[in-house]
Structure formats: C-alpha cells, structure tokens
Amino acid sequence: MDDDARRAPIAMADGDGRYLLNIAEQLQALPDPGALLDTAALAHHIQQRAPLYDKAQEGHYNLISALHKSMRGSDPDASLYWLARMLDGGEDPLFVARRLVRFGVEDIGIADPHAVQQALAAWDVYERLGSPEGELAIAQAVVYLATAPKSIAVYRGLDAAHRAARRTGSLMPPAHILNAPTRLMKDLGHGKDYQYDPDTTDGFSGADYFPDDMDHETYYQPTRNGYEAQITERLRHWADLRARRRSG
Image (cartoon, rainbow, N blue to C red; front, side, top):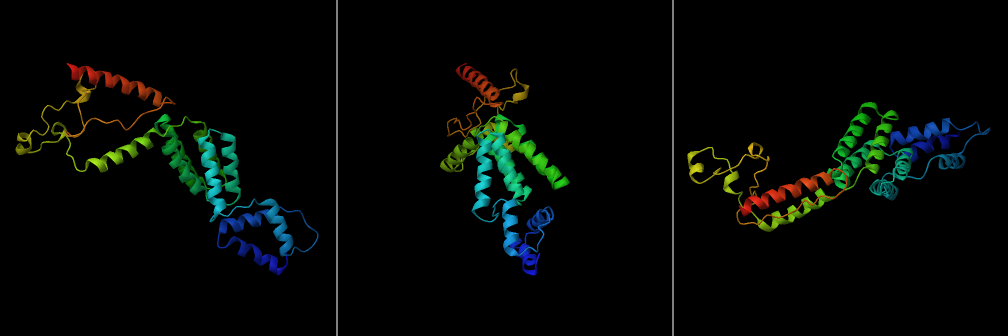
C-alpha cells in the first residue's frame, strides 16, 4: 500500500481497535494484487469483503432490531444470519449478549424459565473466552431463544401492577401478613390468623394478600405456551380452592 492507503484504515476505524484489526486481517487475506494499492483500490477491496455496518448509527440499530424480531418470530436461521452480520461488521459481542438477556425476560419469560439462564451463560462464556470461541456461545443462545416458546405475560402483568400501584397510592398490607415483633403490634392485630401456607393440607391457604380496601385483581395472565401452560392449570386449581374456602 502507498502512504495514503496505509493511513486510511486508521481513519476508517475512527478509534475502534477491533475494527482496525478486522481491516488488517482482511487485507492480509487478499491475494497479491501485483501492484501498489492506493486508497481507491483499498476501499474497493474492503467494501467487497466487509458488509456496510455503522455501529454508532442507523445500521447498528437496524441489525439488532432484525436479530430481535427474527428471534421473536422463532426463525433460528434468520437470527443466525443477523448475528453473523453484526459480528462480521465489528459489533461488540457483549452488546449482543446484553440484548439476549433482555430478550429472555421480555419476550420469553416464564414460558421457558431456562431462556434467561442460557442468555446469561452465553454472556459469561464470552467474557471468559473472548472471540472467536466465545461467539459460539452467543450463537447457541440465539438459537435457543429463537426456538423457545414466547410469552410477554410477565411484562404485561408488571405493567398492569404498576398502574394499580399508582392508582391505589399507599394502602397498607392486610394486618394478618404484617409481622408483630412487639406487644403493641400484636394488640393492633398484626399477624393475627395468619396461615402458613406450606403447613396447610394443600399447601395453599387461600388467604387474601391485597390491601383491605382493595379487591383482588389479576395482573399475570399466563399463556398456553411452554411452561406457562402448567402455571395456567396451577392457578386455576388454586382459584377453585380459594372459591370453595370462601364459600365455606
């Protein structure tokens, strides 16, 4: 390369050492062109081998959005493609790992409780191994998340609970679930008639844990997807027990 071409990769990297190393590796893999490379020839070869990807601008957000939506759409192949595009473009794998953890709790939740564990494990493995070996752990998590059952029931439930909390203000918990470390608190009824659920026949007392001035409300509505199908049946069973005990 001539002098201008040698300076060009430094300017192109704009302070990103990983990107600069990627350019160097691409140039090293080029066949001998038989002539001195100037900046135009350098740009030609780099653009041929490196997909356009601006980590700080629109391309960065477009590709992570494409990865996220491909996993949400349960397409592992498209998910791997967008992951590869990002990694080949010099994206920080830890940025992807963080987004995978978010995806595990936001788009999958309790439909597969292992999803967030897989995402966290990929993050941990990458921090231990680095590139390129650690990128395989991220790819494994991407495939797991893409093929996992999906649910946003917890996301919706928390949003509904936030709205209720803002609406009801500072209502106190019911007295029966308040601790009573002093005699005065006992005299006020704290802890009176509290039922220890694990010690009941069904492991379920059916007690009301909402404030006394607030009706029981439902925020978490599990889907029929994955593990949440079992939770749906369990909640239905507890609702039947609660209704029978309240009716006497």
